[in-house]
Amino acid sequence: MLHIYCPHCEEHREEEEFRPKGEAHIARPADPENTSDEDWGNYLFFRKNPRGLHHEQWFHAAGCRKFFNVTRDTVTYDILETYLPGQQPAVTAESRKAKASAQASNQGAAK
Amino acid sequence: MQHYSGFGLVKHGLSYHENWQRMWRNPTPKREYDIIVVGGGGHGLATAYYLAKVHGITNIAVVEKGWLGGGNTARNTTIVRSNYLWDEAAWLYEHAMKLWEGLSQDLNYNVMFSQRGVMNLGHTLQDMRDIHRRVNANRLNGIDGEVLDVKQIQEIVPHMDCTANRRYPVMGASWQPRAGVARHDAVAWGFARGADALGVDLLQQTEVTGFRISGGKVLGVETNRGFIGAKTVGCVAAGNSGVLAKMAGFKLPVESHPLQALVSEPMKPILDTVVMSNHVHGYVSQSDKGDLVIGAGIDGYTGYGQRGSYPTIEHTLQAIVELFPIFSRVRMNRQWGGIVDTTPDACPIISATPVGGLFFNCGWGTGGFKATPGSGHVFAATLAAGKAHPLAAPFTIDRFISGKLIDEHGAAGVAH
Image (cartoon, rainbow over all chains, first blue to last red; front, side):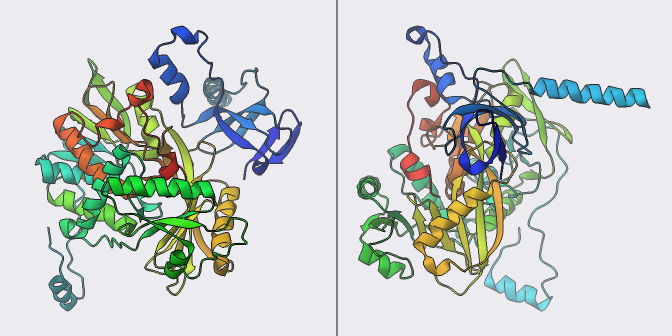
C-alpha cells in the first residue's frame, strides 16, 4: 500500500483515497488545426513508461478531489516527492544520477 | 528428441525414472544467427518453434534474461478463450484457439488444455446488451458462443449466488464452450522442448543490454555474454518491451502495469468451469490441483516491480465472495504480480519498427496467455517473410498514428 502526501491537504493518506492518472507534464498541441497526425498520435497514445523515475498525476478522489503530481520510482514504488500542478519536479533521473555520482566521489575523497 | 508416450513411461519406470533425457540443451551462444528472438516466455518460445517447424529456419536463438517461462507465462491465470468483439481481434485469438486444440499432439507434450468453458457474467441491462452483441459478433465469425439465462447458469455453476436481490444480481452470461484453461508452465516447456529439438538455441541468463544498429538496420544484440549478431531480431518481452524499444531509440504506445493474481489452498472439486465478471471485476477457476485461481484488474499505476498494492487484491476478493459466498472462508495460499504491457486499445502490437529488421510483438496486456500459440505462429511468419502475416497486419504500431484502433476494452480491458 502506498502512503501518499497530498500537497493540497498537506497530509499523508492511504493509496485507496487516490487514483493514479498517468504521466504528468504532457503538453497539448498548441495549434490543433496545424498539428500533424503523428504529433496527435504521440500526444494521445505514446508515453515514456520509464523503468525508474516517473513523474505522474494523481487525483485525491476520496479527499480534496484535486490533482497533483508525484515523482515515483516504478521499480521500488518509492514516492520521492509530491508537488502541485504547474510546478516542476525537484527530483529527476538526472538529479538522482548527479547525486549518486557526487556521493561516490565524496566517498572516494574520504578514503 | 525423446518421444513421450505411455509406453515410454512404463519403460522408464523400470529404471526408476532416472534416465529421462533433458528437455533442452544449455548451449553456448554462436557469433551469428539468422534470427534472434528476445524473450523466452511462451510467446517467444512459440515464435522460435514455429519459425523452425513451419518456416524451416533453425539457425535461431531465443535470448532470455532469466529462465524460460519465468515472467508472465508463469504468473497468469491460464484462461484461454477467443470471444473477442472485433473481426481483427477475433480472427487472431480464434487462430490461437485452433492451434490450442491440437497443441498437445503437435508438441508431443501435455499442455493440459481443458475446454471446460468460460462464462462472462452480465449484471446490468447494459452488460446484457453488450453480451448479446458480442455473442452475435462471435457467431458471425464462426466462433462458438451462447447467451445463457440465470437458470442455465445455475445448472453449470450451482454454487454461485444468482439470487435477484443482490447488489449486483447475475442477469445472464455469455458462454464459450470451447474456451477453458491450460497448464501455463507446460506451454512454455513444451514449446521450448520442441524448438530445442529442431535446433533452436535457448540462451538463458542472457540479458539484452542494447542493440547494434547501423544505417537504420539492426545488426544484432549486445548482451551480458557479449555481442550476438542477427539481421532479424524479434522482441517479445511483455512488460519490458518499452525498455527494449528505448534501447533501440523509439517509443512504444504501451504502459507497464502490475497485474496481480492469487491461488487458494487446494480443495475438493467444486468449480468445473471458468467464471469471469467484468462488472464486479474478478474471475475464478479451479486448477487440477484443486486450488482456486483468482485474478482481476491491473493496479492503476505503472510499475515494473512485479508486485502490486493490497487494495487491488482486496477488491478482487470482494468480487469473488460477492459471487461465491461459499468461498468466503477459503484461505489464500499465494499471491503475486506480473508486469503487463497495456496498449490504449487493449489489443497487441505485432509490427515492424522504425529500425530495419527489428520487429516487436508486445502489448498483449492482461490477456496474452490465451494467444500464445497464435501469437508465436503469426510472429514467426512475420519474421520469416520480413513483413506482417495477414492476421497480424492490422496490429501495427502505425494504428496509433492513423487512428485505426481496434477497441477491445469491452472484451479485453478488464477480465481475463
